[in-house]
Structure formats: C-alpha cells, structure tokens
Length: 278
Image (cartoon, rainbow, N blue to C red; front, side):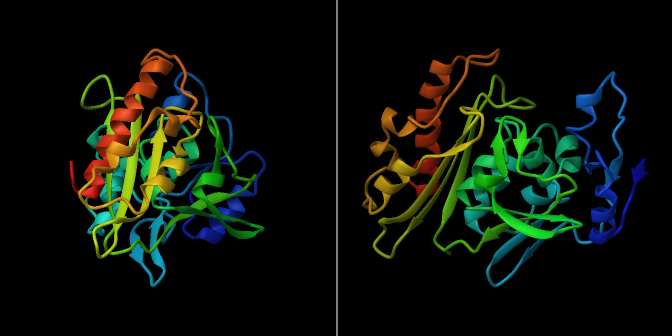
C-alpha cells in the first residue's frame, strides 16, 4: 500500500493500517533499504497541509514536522534559535537539507542526529497524532534509546513545539567531525545562555550528542552556571565531573575516551559562544 494523504486526519487513518510507516523527505528511510524491498505500507506525508513551516504563537514557536533543514537555516528566528539554525546547516549536504525534515531527524533517533542537542537546549516538545487522538511529549521523553522513540503504532509527528524563549537568550552549536562537510558527528554540543539585567547568567541549557545512546542535558553544569558573573567565561566552570552522565562508545569514528575529551572542548566553546565571550 502507498497512501498520499492531504490532511492530518487522512494521514491518521492511513497510519492505522497494520505496519504502516510514515515517510516524507525519505533521506533516512530510503538509504536504509538499499538492496532491500520496501514491504511495509507507506504513508507519504509530503502533501499533508499544515505540516511544513514555522509559526509563532503567544506561547512560543511551532515547527511543522515536514519543515526542512533549509527552511530552518534561513528562517527569521530569534537569537535563541541560532544553535538550531547552525545545526540545520550541518545536516548532510545542501541537497539533504532541502529534503530532510525535522521530524525525520527526530524519528530516526540516531545518537548523532544534529538537530537533537539544540532542540533539547530549547526545551522542545513533540506533538503526536493518531486515529486515537493527540498528545505532546517533551523531546527528552520522545527519544528513548538507540533508534528508539515513544511513537505508538499508528502515530505520526505533526509538530515540534518550542516554548517562547527569553529575549536575552542566545544559543550556539558546535560539531566535531573528521572533515568540515558531509560528515556524521563524532561529538556535538549545544548551549543556550540567558543573562539578567546585571549580565549574570540567569539560565543555561547544555546538551551533548553522539556521546550516549540518546543526547543528554548536563543538568549539574546548568545549575552551577546560574548566577555566573558577566566577566567570567562559562567554560571556566566546566570540569570532567559534569560529563558523568554521558556514555560514549568506541567506534570507527572515535574512541570513548576521545569523545569525553572532545566533549569538554565542544561544550566550553558552545557555552562561551552563547554567552558572547568566545
């Protein structure tokens, strides 16, 4: 079966078919099936009205599931989204950025998904719809393991929701790879820093990807950064103990020990960039 719905309601009904799989940009689905037939029922979401684009509401921002990384990279978003826009320019090639979608990046649930750390630092949530109804999960509860999400059978992602950031919030994204372009991340870090009227850090959010089965927030570091004076670099507080929640592995791209060392450098750089003291 191949369905191409034009409304969310039609998509939900099509996804109710046993074993149905959603596809939109296809930049993850099709490469994963090279040499293998696509035997599951496919529901093509690329024509569903309302799934592409970014809208601002009184409570924050809504990013449609079919919004491409090129859309995000060029969107007129506030500085709190600079880290996400930087990550958007790192997702594969320009051709992939033109086709790949934000929801596809999340549903693929790769530990090295570039979009996840900056979205975690923005406290993003994921809106899910099925024939049974609609629900919203924090992104931290949506990706639950290596290539695993909390999607129930028949559910699709319709929106990524981001609460309204403070006007003073700034963010940054740092990616480490074996080359500058067209590379899977060895390690990445995203940071968001908000300062108060005296220049002290009022709030910080830091996330690290490709160093655990799921990207992780560094909550202990975030708590210690609160109240840091304007003249001090956030990176000056960073210590190996702040990475204790990470669980990197040895693979073809790097050793676990190297990833931990790289994480210290990447987190420090991202924090200082977001704080405006790099």
